[in-house]
Length: 391
Image (cartoon, rainbow, N blue to C red):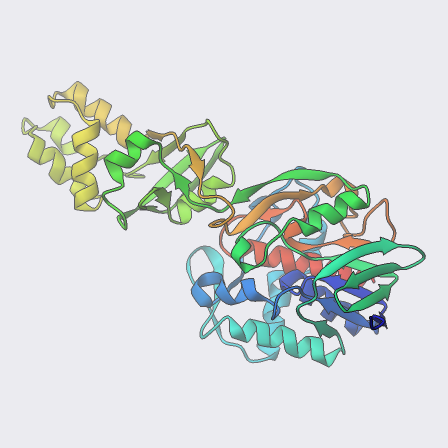
């Protein structure tokens, strides 16, 4: 049996996604000899599929409040020291055109491949080496970190874990980063799927799932959080930006409330007039919601008569439509994983473990989860840059 090749580097980065590549670039700029070990056949696969292939790479209005974390102050340091403007400067230096959609979301004009191309070019410029198809067999620490793959051994004084979460397992997501944290004695905040569609109970599926593809702008609320964006009915339940946003805050067994006509008084004219027919009610709601959905909703949620009192009750119901989801669509459909390596274990300035010198955790593997709209990429760039600059 042939002996394994031994590689020696200053820094080993596990994971060639957004956070890992940014860390390697920043460490390389500071003269560190960096290796990136990526288990897939190419780096940055999640970047390529994000934003419908155009990559929602940051958000102009990204703030610490756009994140879920057991310690709401942890993310402040990294986000302050690597801002959306810093990433835009990188893209502009490579002449990558981009545009703003709603709510500060920035996308590539052409393709997400342009973001991955910038990261690859920057890695090459600083001499960071990328080892693809690197399946890790063992990691141990003596005076150095020793990472054994199927055909080689890598040694370095610094190990950066950027292995992501459990979302989209068909793209290679695993619990590797959490297992490694536990191996070195770090605590984990139990992970859960975030930014994920919700599933109706059997009765609501029967009532509404004949209307897949119907969408409307709504305000959806639970657990003290509210989002005003589009909601989409699916074959199994609800999706769309508003639902993905609220899913990160939803707890099993808790209802969500949906305002189907935010800022509108649907039945105002009917209450003031003597014309209170079923057809008048339908016309009023169809002026706000898609016709099929308005018709179905009225059939199921309004009383038989149209008295002033009944109209007032219907108005309240429209603005506080209660839904009890039975579950989410899980990690297979989740855009990100919430939870992860407990931030109490890490330096907020450098992302280094407080217990194990030279061990860093960055990106999605950490218990910092952004809302929809480019915030998770900004956390990847910021946490990666923080670690890379600290090496």
